[in-house]
Image (cartoon, rainbow, N blue to C red; front, side):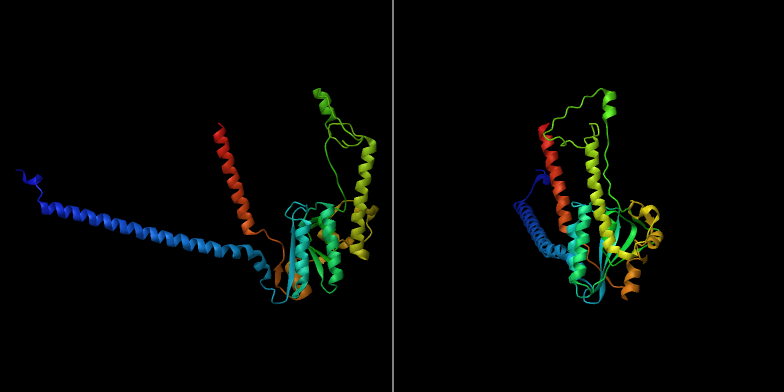
Length: 321
């Protein structure tokens, strides 16, 4: 009998026992790993639930830091001022109200770098600044101009007590604009016929594919003139006697000036930036940012929503093919 193929009952029993022991140890190790992963995910879940309130409250906590001591409140207006834009009247007004309520704020600085925007949104902020100045007569509200403060941006700045600029800043553009295009000759050359039905003689006013009607142009110009006059009145009320006469009354013509020139004609007061104004005018280098900030959770939710929508859309497209 071949000795290599022979296994005694004892050796076979040892082999089975070793196999059972290995399987048992493997099962124990798997259970340990499962418990470790379970603990890890429980701790991770706990960390997420702890972090969510902190992340949600971070913008408010950040603005409150340093409020225990005297400081200057800063509200940034950076970009186009429109209702649905990041710079909108509601957010700016909310920030101004919060800053005005802060008992440790020695002043409020509007840090403006804006080409303008909606005259309605700008007027809302202008009126709120005037209201806050009546409620808090001892609280200075200053404007500091960055690269540009034009049109609606200057509308807001005109409500402040003082306007500070950089010598190279562009400031002004006290005017109103409406623009569009006309394609009537192009359509004639292409042999395209315009078919337009309306109920109301002027319902298609300023339609780019129809000829201009003098009556409608006159009407729209009258509207622009009214809004322009409202702008002029606001600037005159805000700046008062500081405004200087300019040749041919160009002050309200829509022109812009450099920061240096703006001081000479009275639409600005002095050279300065946020730090220098805080230090030189109010004796502190401590500033607190009251600008509304987008919550991190909102940003993540937006990104997750976009990603989820994209994934669902891709899935639907795949299913339709």
